[in-house]
Every structure is written in structure tokens, then in C-alpha cells.
Image (cartoon, rainbow, N blue to C red; front, side, top):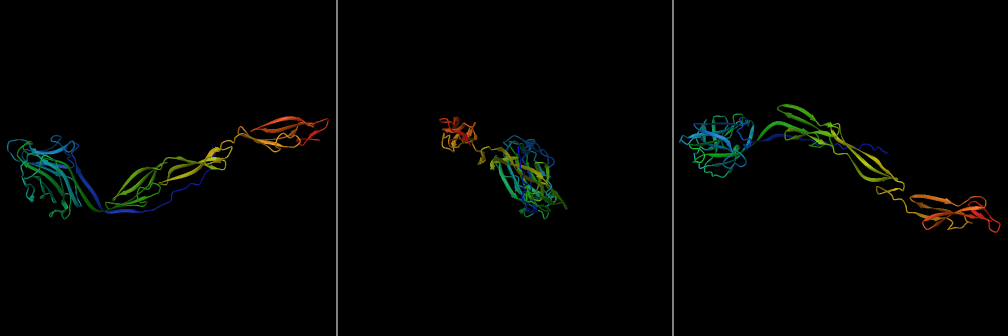
Amino acid sequence: MAIKTLAIMSMALVVLSISFTGVQAYEFSEDWETGSISSLKWATSGTNQYRTYVTTGYSPRDTYHIRMDDSRGDGTYSRNELTTKEDFSGATTMQLSFYWKEQYDESHYCPSTWNFSANGDCVAFTCDGFVWHKIIDLTGGTSSYKNEVYNISTHPNFCEEVDSSFAIKFQHYDNYPLGSDGIFLDDISVTYEIENDDSCEDSDGGIVADVFGYLTISLNGSQYNQSDYCDDGSTVMEYYCDGNYEESQLTSCGTDSYGDAYCIGDDVYKDYTDNYCSYGACDYSVTPTLQESCEYGCYGGSCNEPPADYCNETDGGMFPYTFGTAFGFFSGYSYSEPDFCVNNVTLTEFYCSGDYHYETNISCVVNGTGYCYDGKCQF
């Protein structure tokens, strides 16, 4: 196959810098679908016969939820406590969302503020691990789940500066097991934002595989760079910013392919596009490649069909005294057959009959005279 090389057509370089600084959003969430209480996320505590555990009973929102009640029915009051262990340091805004329901539980209201511990059914937060501030009482509920949403950062006692001592506590207080007392918790979420000096700047503006780019990253007081690079001949490792922080993904440069057929002269060509990775960016080259040479010419990306059989002649028929040529096409091939003298007295005459040509030998001697010369009979 003949190949004609065309110069590489590279993608145009576009530099668009995008940077992110300032506020980063986070979420602490718990749906209990692991089937247990994570000791990395939660601390359980309480008094007397407290019982806080994950269960599938009593219609969770999905498969599991938290149950809080007294483990015995002897009338002894017990307090259940479920406290976050997440480090919320630096949080400036904070919103709590959770679902809860109760099972014939009497209402025990918490005080608005207390030191260390207090009996009651409520949710509270602490800034220092000692003084607790009530967010909402868990009273007056039903056996159906209810969603509670509260912006903790608008609480009048919200911390001047949130550090690792900050925590949120869910608690229940009563004296009988589930069936007479108890509450359930599910789908707890704390969304919060942290102002920081971390930043990320992307020289190519995002996930742009055909432009080489690099990140300038400030993280925890240190600065470094990450540059796009070719993972292999057809894949680029593309770095980009997600908020203040770096992310990366492998991106294919595309599948090599042939384009539509077209004509160059009497030949059929197709452009072959070769996609590849070079110097940390996707690029491509286009090479016209010969597909077929056309005997009868090329039109619209295809070879012309051979012409139909036909015959024509210059002397108008079988006229031995006029030199002529029969010409035309037969079975896809052109021909041209001139009349000629076999010898000095015999002429080979070519003539047409319909779309086909024939030949016959004619004697030029008539009544004892005549001869053949220059492809015709003469006197």
C-alpha cells in the first residue's frame, strides 16, 4: 500500500489558569450500614444499664440503625450517650442533619447548658469537652422517622474557634427496654467548612488532555508541583484541581481511525488519524493513505466503473478505398485498430457492427488492376 506522509497537525496550546483557595467543604456521615459502631468515629458511654447498639429491628431507613434504651425492666434509670470522635478543627460553619424516632418514650428534657453530664433526651455540642450546649430535645417523637436539620454555627454558644475538643453528643434517658422506652437514630450527617491557606492552581484549566499542564499546590504550608505525563503511548495522566487539592485521572487519547474516502487524481485515499501521547499531552497525526488505484478514474471517493462496450470508426464503415480506424471499448479495455495492408494486394479492413468491431480481408485487385498501399486500396 502506498503511503503519503502529511506533516503532524498538533493541537493548539491554550493556557487557562484556575486556582482555588479559602474554604473547603467536608462531610462527616454515618448510616450504620457496616452493621456496627465504628470506634474510630464514635464513643459510646452511659450510666447504669445503658444500651446503645446497631440493629436491624424496628424498621430502619435502610438495613441498620442505632437503638438506645435501658437493658432491663427494673425501673432503674439509665443514660445512653453516643459522641462523635471526628476532629472538626478549624470548622467555621457547621450543619447537622439526622433522623430519629421513639418507641413510647417519656419526655426528659435536657438543660440548655451543663457541665460534663446531664440526664435527658437531646442532642448537644461541646467546644471544650466539658461544657455542653443543647441543640435540640429528642422529645415528642413518633414511631416514624423524622428528619432534623440544625445549623450549629448559628447557636449563640457556638465556639469562637473550633478545635479537636469539639464534639456532638446524642443521648437518651429512661428506665425500660424497647417496647416501653427507647429511641432510634439513622443517617447522621455533619457538613462543615474550613478556611485554610491550602490552594491549587492548574495551568491548563482542568481536565484538558490535549494541553500539557501542571499544578502548583500549597498544602499544609508546603508548596509543590505536579505535571501531566504520558502513562503510555496512548494515555495521559491528567492532573487537575478539586477545590484546594490535587486530583488525577488517566485519560485516553482516543482510538486510531480512518476517515472518509476521497480522490487524489485517479486514486482513492483515506486519512489515517493516529492518536498518541507526547510530552504530557494528547496529540495526533494525519496521514493520507492510498486505498485503491483506479483504472478508469476516481470520483467522490470511489473508482469509476469501466465504460460500456462501444465501437466507432473514422471512415464511416466498410470503405476499402478510405483509410480508417475502428476504436472504442470492449470488456473494460480500450482499443484502436487502423486498417492496414496485409500485402500489396490485400487490405485488412476494421469496421463496426453495433457496439463491437470486426475485421475482414479485402482484395484490392478488381478487373485485373488495383493494389494496397497506406492502409487502403488504390487504383
